[in-house]
Length: 87
Image (cartoon, rainbow, N blue to C red):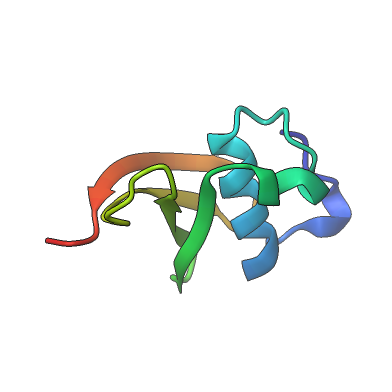
């Protein structure tokens, strides 16, 4: 996903959008993200990244999700990991 240079460094809201679009295959326009099963649960900010916890709403227990790490300076996803939020 191309990020306009004027949007760098990434802020929290853009990190959430990048994470959701990344999980949706980058094809989903930001205004249609509410149609995807990926909802933000939590965001943690570090000095260089945003760590975005996403819930997969297809999981009825709301335990399964994905943690996406977005680099602030570039807007690139540098890590993605499946997580269980109930453990």
